[in-house]
Amino acid sequence: MKIRSRFLKSLFFWLLAPGDLLMVLGGFYLSFVLRFGGHIPAANWHAFLRVLPWTGLAALLFFAGLGLYRYQYNGLMPVLRAAVTGILGVMAATMALTFWLRGFAFPRSVLVLAMPLQGVLVCTWRYLYWHVHRWFFGRRELLVVGPPEEAAEILGKVLDLPRGWFRVHCVLPPERLAELPGRLREVDAVLVVPSLARGDKADILNACLKARREVFLVPDLYDIMLSRAGLTQLDDLPVVEVQDIRLTWPQRMVKRVVDVALAGLGLILLSPVMLVCALAVRFTSPGPVLYIQERAGLAGRPFRLYKFRTMVEGAEKLSGPVLAEADDPRITPAGRFLRATRLDELPQLFNVFRGDMSIVGPRPERPVFVAQFMSEIPDYRYRHLVKPGLTGLAQVSGKYTTAPADKLRYDLYYIRNYSLLLDLKILLQTIPVALGGEAARGYSNGTDPVRRAAIHALVNGSREAAAGKEAGKL
Image 1 (tube, rainbow, N blue to C red):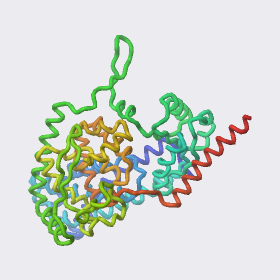
Image 2 (cartoon, rainbow, N blue to C red; image 1 turned 135 degrees about the vertical axis):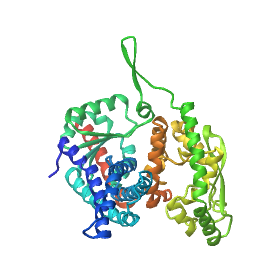
Image 3 (tube, one colour; image 1 turned 180 degrees about the horizontal axis):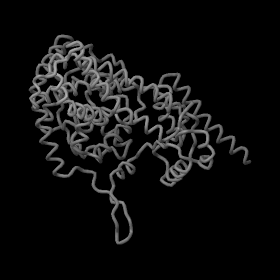
Image 4 (cartoon, rainbow, N blue to C red; image 1 turned 120 degrees about the vertical axis):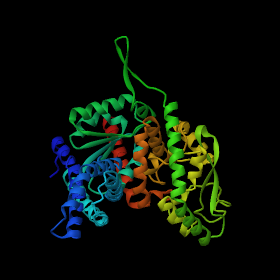
């Protein structure tokens, strides 16, 4: 039976952090037992107790930065990859803490044993939690409100979600919004498309609040601009003040200092990895190691971007500029691995050091595609208010197959809500994304037949119902 109690849902969610801490500390304890048996030396155990509070805090910070304490509906594997990344961070933090706190009696063998044990315990805990949570609170009936043509694009993403979270009840066109109060009794949540009029969105939110139904709103530029708007007043009139979306000069200065420091450090530490990548490209396909391409940067100004070549030489001689597709035959075997792990983008650290790019920001696009997107999406120009990035919110949250309009929403949200903490969170979340590889697949040019048929049935069903209702009026 599905449980809809908000209190129980909140209580269930707050079990996550204590469970993570228990698994992390339990891994340490088991590693002590395996290392010393039943008689743990007091000096070693006291050294562990000394760093325990700080290790627990580090674990919570890493897990929070990796997005493990927010609701996610995009599957179990991203959660498990983030958890493994968090365990690596906990190990590094614990090693640093034992050095700073002079806890030299903390055996390094315990740290080595603890890492795989913690990985197994945390992943098992998260696996059980994810399935139990989905069983209790999933399988919700979802009502999609918006024009059928636009709703069809969104339905493809909903049907891509793991089974058990949502079942699409129907699509409700704008001309049938009068039916919404009655429909809300049959569903658990409502998804609102971005093109609806402001008045219609307000009516939907009011009806959902009254019926205590959850609302998912796909934002447009107006909604994103209001996300951090502050309340002020003109005399005694309360008004919402929307400020410039650009970064302030102190933010730009801090961001540049961090970029130079991280790019310089990255070029030094990752030089062996870059050498291996260069050799892999050189000996697996003829052609240059680096691929140099013009991209649009800050304010749309072009710059020369460097990356390891992942396609056969002259891949666009016959086709011209085209986006890479899933299973693109132009991609070399080494290039497929480099793309999946994002290692092909390491030479862009030179671009960051030079000032063409930032470590975090929107993905740099080619001018030919920028012109195309700007003609189709009027708000696309706003993403050029900051430097493009080596990684970004759209890169860690979406895929290469994500539509440009959806990537733009991530980019505008990032620009509007920029902070150094947000940059650090995106950098952390880049690690499990690179480990997974599926976010780097090429552009998908279609929907599989099963989902296409399901979308077609839902959209046509809403049209036929509307036509039947109009015929009944005649």
